[in-house]
Image (cartoon, rainbow, N blue to C red; front, side):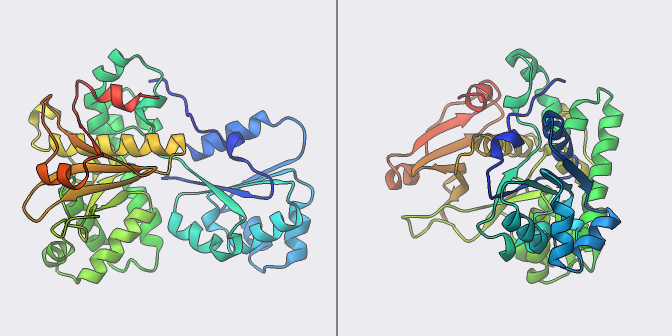
Length: 375
């Protein structure tokens, strides 16, 4: 399947700012970085991966002279998987302060690791670019072809490598390997994860609750641990770009639920790999959850690509009235219901009474592309 990224590093480079490109593993950060570097003819380019031992020798001691001597000959410094470089935050600050004309680009598969290392040193000195699995708007296919492949998107997701693989069994193998990389190569390397099997059980329970409010107490009881541990593990999983936490929306009504949260997976294929479930839709009982996860992530991708400062919530009252997705954009509220089958409906009465200026729509399999591909 052909696709084309709408985000572009060259459009994000700003003088006197380090560009930090975040995103999950194997989502295309390195490919995007290499494409940018190929376009740069003339000037000196330094490119290396963060596990390069030489970089560790340069940055670990925090010697300003050595770091600046390293940076001085190059016009562009691109460090892939920069979270592995000791003291990268302080080092990047030294370089951009001394050489504000240089283009310094860092990529990372862990917002936890890289954010912690950049932290205060790069405050006011960097911009970020978030790269997510491919969106429907980045597919170079007709609307007819996109609808034809809809079931594949719901089951196998939209990682570039998965989209490029026509063989179903190889798609599944790629996704299983991705999950192993997430859980063992990244998350389990963190000192905060002492019980890897517990982490996997927590993630699996969340996967079965996509589209529903998640009770940390219930998960804690099920996996026989405490609520604080469950919350910490879910926070780690979000910072490793596996899940996305969405809070309840509340502004007016006393009986609106605001303390609980939903968790969506950044990719349907990863979610299905976590629960080892790749059956066709006709043999599944979770089509509604897959559809809601797909629509939420497509809306989030669209906002991210367009650089919109949109915030997403869900809405529910103690009396049971609910809305799947609430989008707040420039003060305007949009209520969105996700229905696999086409149907008509109206916003819940309490929602309409509390937020009369909000829009309401139902996104189903017959109209979703009109919404997702709209300019």
